[in-house]
Image (cartoon, rainbow, N blue to C red):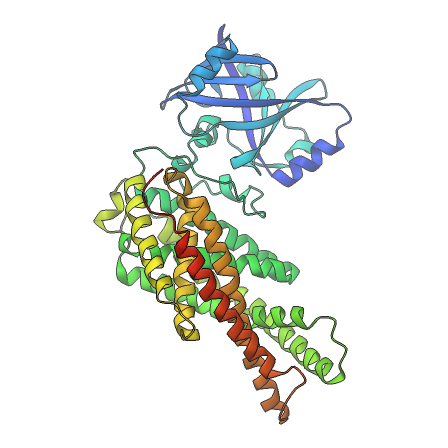
Length: 470
C-alpha cells in the first residue's frame, strides 16, 4: 500500500511522559521491534514486528510529509531481512490513546535507547496538520518539535553514533541515571576511532553534568559518587587514547579534571570510614566519629561551592568545545584509523602491560607501586567498558570480571591507608597519643590486604586469558 505519511513528531521528557501515561484511564499498547536494512538521506527500508504482525516498509522523503509503502511479510522473511540490519534494533512500546477525539501515539524506548520518548500525531491531509494545536496537557511534557529534524527519526536512532552533537536533547532528555550498563553505540566499519570515542566521551560528559547538578540540588552522597565516577571515566579514556589528541590541549583538559576530582577525594574517604565505624558505641570513638561528621559537612559545603563556581562552568564549557569539535582541530592523524582495528591493537598492548605489572607484584611491593598499578587497571577497565562490542572475539567479559576483583581489593588497600592517616591526624589535632581504633590493627589489615593482592595476582596469571581471539 502506497500513501502519504503526514505527521508531527515531538521529543518528550521521559519522566514526564511516563507520569502522563499513568494518568490515562484508557490506552492500549504494542511492543515494536524494527530494523533498518537500507538508509540514505531521502529513503529508508525497514522491517518491523508489531504484535504478531511482520511488516516491510519503504519511506521516501523527509520532514512532516513523506511517501510510505507498506506490506505484510512472513515471519521467516522478517528474520532473513533483519539479519541485514544497519546499526542496532530499535525496541519500543507504543501507547495509543485519544484526547478530544484525536488519536495519539506515544513511544517509550527500551534497551539501549531507554530513557527516550516521542509523541507522534498522524493527519489525513496538510490542512489538518496546519490547523492542529497541541493540547496543553501534552505541551507540558514536550521538549521540542522534531518533525523536520532527520536526526530524530528512528532510523537515525538505530545509527546513534551518527547524530550530530549540536542535538544535545537526544542525550540530555534520556534517563541516564542508572548509567545504562547495556548502552552501546551503533558501529559500522566506516567509524573512525575518534568518532567512536567522541560519542562515549560526550555520553559520560552528559552524565557528569547531570550528577553535578543533582549534587548541588540534593547534597546527596550517591550523586557525588556518580559525578566522581564519570570524571574518572573521562580522565581514564583520555589517558588511554592520548595519542589521538594534541598534547598541549589534552594536558590542559586532564589537569582541569584532576583538580576537580582531587577536591572531592577527602569527603569520599571520610564517608567510607564513617560507614566502617557505624555501630561503634565507645565514647572515645564516638567523639572521633563526630569529628569526622563535622569534617564531612565542611567538605560537602566546599564541593557545593566548587560545583557552583565560574571556574567549574568554564571547565565544562572548555571540555564541551573540545569534545563536540567536528573539524578535528585538536586531534592527530591517527584519529582517522578504523575503530575496530585500532581497538584490537590497543587491547593487546594494554593487556600485556597489565600482565607485566602484575607479575612484578610480591609481598615487598610498596603502597606507591600498588597504587600505580591500580590506576593502570582502572584505565584498562574503562577501555574495555566502551570497547566490548568492538572486541567480540576476545575474552573481555572474563577479563573485566577479574579486573573488578582487583579494583575492589586495591580500593580497600587505598581506603585503609587513608583511614590510618585520618586517625593519625586526629590524634595530632587533639594532642592525644592514641585512639581506641588500634592503629596496629589497621596496619595489620593493610598488610593482609597486600597479601590478598599477591594471591589474587598469582591466580589471575595462572588463569590468564590470552589475547588470541576465540
